[in-house]
Amino acid sequence: MVDKFSLKDHLFNADTVGRLAAEFAAGVPDFDPDRFAAQVLSGFAERELMARMEWMADCLEEQLADDFEAMADQLEAALPAQLDPSNADDDFGHFIHCVHGILAARHGLEAHRVRAMGVLYQATQRFSMEFYIRHFLNRWPEQTLAEMAVWAMDDNYHVRRLVSEGTRPRLPWAQNVGLTPEQTLPLLDMLHSDQARFVTRSVANHLNDLSKVVPDAVLARLAQWEGAGRQDAKELNWIKRHALRTLIKQGHAGAMEALGYAADVPVVAQIVLADNSVTIGDALAFEIKLTSDMAVPVLVDYRIEFARPSGKSAQKVFKLKVGQVKADGPLILKKSHKFKGGMSTFALHAGAHVITVQVNGRDVANADFALTD
Image (cartoon, rainbow, N blue to C red; front, side, top):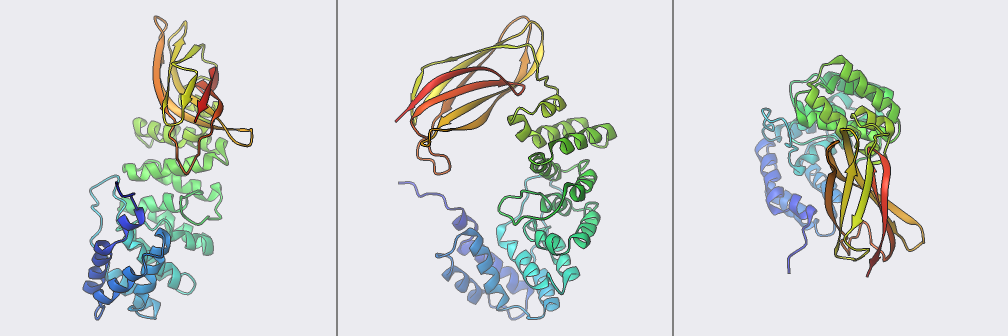
């Protein structure tokens, strides 16, 4: 039997805690790495991922100075080497270095804001401080935003990314921030032309968050950036697609138009199912045929309406194809959708289901099928 993967044990274990202990022992006089590691590991079994992060900080502060100014010096002295500044993407750092942000926010937020922000600035070049800057944004919004406007021009792309990621309205796992689009969009104006994909991906994710609340403002900003011409056209197009992904799934006409897909595209669609019944655990094979009298770009998705025990249905949209329907022949798409059973996040239930084809956000064909146990 294959052991189930555990993210908390992958991130926080004897090896990673030992590495953190060694870093503090190297940077902080009289720090006892063995005591720290033993204490931390003894408390892991009863704690989940986020609680382990706080627990490591609890154990650390027992061996650090009570005075925050001195503690800040110790935290910085224990930092490892910076992440490679020559990279441009996918270099998030290691979760063990969350402790620097936890302790900076825990002990510096109220009386030592400037010094604590300095710790976050240094630490985010080793591990993103996106969770911890949010404490400062909520407590000191004007001062923190002013500092982040400076950081948006920093030479280090991890610092620049923190400006966008730390202010995201719906950052996963993180506390909410009480910022408005009017406060954060000027920061994205500075960052959208960044040359690091790590930064532009964050900008796009930030816009995607905003699109769920103020879609028109997001579309207007993207149009403004396109007109300014500060970002490479190919990269800006990537930002647009990534930023508008939620609106595209919703069939938002403005988002479709922004990506060059007309909502009223003259396409005729047919969907043919391999079978009108599929068992949970198996796959539903289907074919979509799209025809048109003229060449038109298309963004094709499909939506499934799932039966629920309440009698109502739940819908999910799935990406299928970005392509072109040509006048001289049909575009034929084939797909096999697996209905995985035993999922804790979305349980499947037997009953009548519907699959609908969307072309450029518009429903163009559908078919009924039954899902069985």
